[in-house]
Image (cartoon, rainbow, N blue to C red; front, side, top):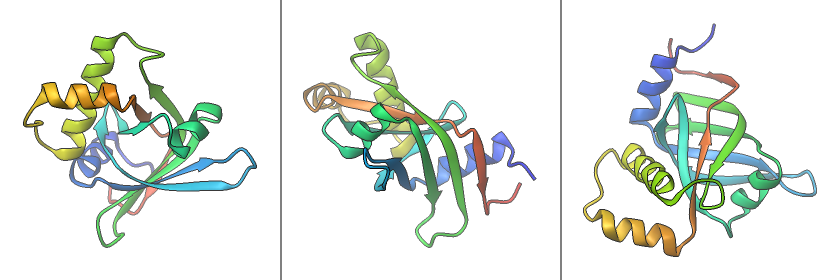
Length: 142
């Protein structure tokens, strides 16, 4: 039975701990712990261009993202292609808004100082990674 988009949104709104699986250049799996939030039907998180997850996804966008609560039950898996939002692909205003949306959805609140946040995102060359999930499964109830 397919998991409804409403259930995916509800689960991702309340659960932010995730493990991302990407593919290394040698074909091995790279696992990364990430904090995610709900965004446009899938999950979003930020990272820097120097991280293995970014390098791997930039080369091979296929990935899996397991989202869970702290005791690993229930869980939700999104399998599909990652979409990278960066200064290389978006105008500065659009990227700023997506990075802010990633923070809001993962933290569940507004940042106390958006100007500081924006400056840190620029300085760190942060990107946002979005995984929509072509295949969605898990133990959440429909």
